[in-house]
Every structure is written in C-alpha cells, then in structure tokens.
Image 1 (cartoon, rainbow, N blue to C red):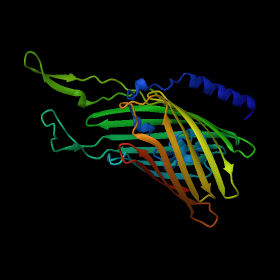
Image 2 (cartoon, one colour):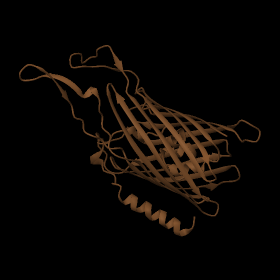
Image 3 (spheres, helix red, strand yellow):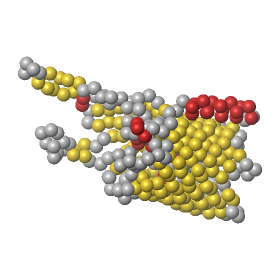
Image 4 (tube, rainbow, N blue to C red):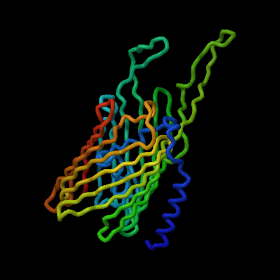
Length: 346
C-alpha cells in the first residue's frame, strides 16, 4: 500500500471517529446488549482488552478485527468465562480463523451467556412460584480482514445479537471496523484503531408484553405494554504498542490504549506482555475510568488484569500447536472474573 492510499485510509478513519460520541457518564446504563463488551478470550481479557494494536487471529475479533489477518496459522479457539464470581453467570465461546487467498482471513466467533436458573416471581407469589427460567443471550460474528503487505491491515465484522426471556425476544445487528499499522525497522511499533458495536437500536417484542386487565365496565381486555428501544454499547479503541527484543528468546511489549465509550466514562489503560520463546507468555494490565466516580456509576472492576499462556508443540517441527490460556480480573465486591482458553493452531 503506497503512502497516498494510507493517507486516504487514515482520513476516512478520522472522519468516522469524528462522528462517534465521546464518553458520556450521564448516559451510563441507557444502552443494552452489554455482553458485547465482555471479552471471552483469555489473552485479551488478561490485557483488559487493551491489545487492539497487536491482537491477532481469533483474539482480534473482540478488540480489533483488523488483526484477524495477522494470524500465522489456522486457529480454533475455545473460551470459558466465569463472570463476577459468585454471580453464577458464565460464558462459552468458539472462534475459528482461516486464511482465504494470499492476504485475507475469514473468521467466525460465537458466544453464549448462561445465567443459571432464576426463580419465577409474580405479584401473587413474590417469593417465587416454584418454577425457574433462564434467559438466552447469544451472538455470532462473521469477520474478514485483509493485509496490505506487512504494514497495514483492515477488517470488518458483522455480528448478530439475540436476547430472549420468557416469551420476549430482541434481535439486533452490530458492525465492527478496524485498522492496524506496523512500523519501525523491525516492525516493532504497532498502532491500532477500531470502532465496535455500531448499529441500530434493539427492542423486545413478544407475547410476554400482553396482559389482561379489567376495564371500567368490568370486562377483561388485553393490553400491550410498549417498551423503549435500547442502543448498542458502541465504543472506539485507539492503542499503541512496541516490541522490545531482549535477546533471542525474550521480548517485552508495553501497550497504552484509550477507549471512548458512548454510554459511559472514557477509559485509559496500560499493560505489559512478556514472551519467553514461543512457549510461554505473561500479561499484566491496568485500566482506569476517566472522570469522577460515583457509587451508582462505578464499575465492579478495579482495573487490574493478569494472564498467562503456555503453547505446546504437537509435532517435531512445531507446525501444530496447542495453547492453554488463563486470565483473571479483580473486582469489588465480587471475587473476580476468570477466563480460560484452549486453542489449536495448525
């Protein structure tokens, strides 16, 4: 990609970013589908999703879709999250990244949220009727990323979002777009910009909104409750990182990232990733909410994220690798969020 095409791409991104609303704590809680903000992949979770500048493969589909095409091999990744222990909420995810053509990569990611069994309560039985129910939250994303040489990669993703609960359901479509730039004499410097969860509002519909009430004449009439539509939690990621090579088998990657939230306070964070050969990885990160913190608007996350990875070769040449990943994020008053991941690269 020549400098003129790169300048045009950057100009388009700047114009797009200019139309995205900056962080607004006054609108916190007004959006829905907040499961779209939960990173189901352990590597990115350990970095508090600050790794948009250098994320690759399936992991990139949760922070910056442009990194999908930088996967060196075909990837199949499984993720499990225990969210805000002991809330009982968990998530399962599956992601696949496959090269298409010379410089393109196609990816698909699925995530389902499990809430456990919740008691059914009514006005007549506020303590519970004895029955239980469980909401169904599910989303599936299909993304494509193209790499222009070694320097620039761009990507786009469309995600279907489904939420349902007892005769009520809502469906929406969200779009992601991103770009990554790699520079420096040894491609050490990395820059990433991504827009996530851009789409129209969602609305719950279904028979669960109908109820029978007595009219003034005493007859039973069916009334339909009107629910307000809710927006998607759109955001903008901007981050940089730099790879420091310490010998032949050791590298350090510090990262700085800024996130602008349309329905909450902006965030800034920093992290460090240590890689020992291709077999081990350690991560530490901290994310801070910009602006005054109130009891109502304060996040349960205290900002600290930790992670570790082990890659095991399954053949002598190392063409097939098995990866084990773990991440932990501190929370208050809960007992933290745990992510575990299993990946196969071939």
